[in-house]
Amino acid sequence: MRADARKNHDHLLTVAGAVVTEQGVDASLRDIARRAGVGLATLIRHFPTREALLEALLRTSFDELAETAAALAASDAPDDALLSWLRDFVACAHNYRGVVALMTTAIEDEESALHASCVTMRAAGTRLLTRAQAEGRARTDLDGTDLFALGASLAWLSDQPALAPRAGHLFDVVASAILTTTAGGGPVFPGAEHTAAPTSPME
Image (cartoon, rainbow, N blue to C red; front, side, top):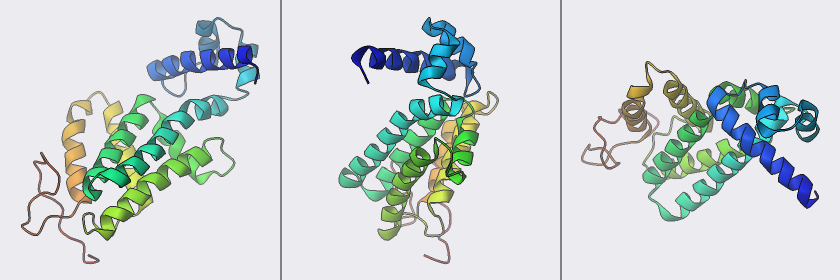
């Protein structure tokens, strides 16, 4: 891509990111083009479909989540790494209102432009979960799909005005259900105020 074309491409993405953050994933493509100072045809030339535009917006965030997972696995305790990544995932999914439903559909649809990015992101979280399970720090009756579903649910809660004030509290509740307890029965992550879920018969 030529330098001028790349500049225009990046400008459209920057504007689209701001509009989608404000309006959600159903934001008007015409509005994005208008705010970017171009015609709708120009936007469509760069991003032929809404899904192509959203894939470009989300790919960077999902790639960063995958990179974060690798860094956490190398430096943090398994339980801390898992919760830190889950918190980042929830924040990412909450950033664009309505993206949870889009991601859920894309994971199941191999033809979706978002499929590869979503699957890669989910796999990164799965590796952290598996590592925590191997160290006895997370319950073993969960898999990567469960972790994704829990994170997506927390992001959805944050999108609901009536429930958003309870999002932090509910994250702690979910976290305590994911993690196992220490030998003494206390929570295994700092600052937790909730009792962890009972150990599964599989553990």
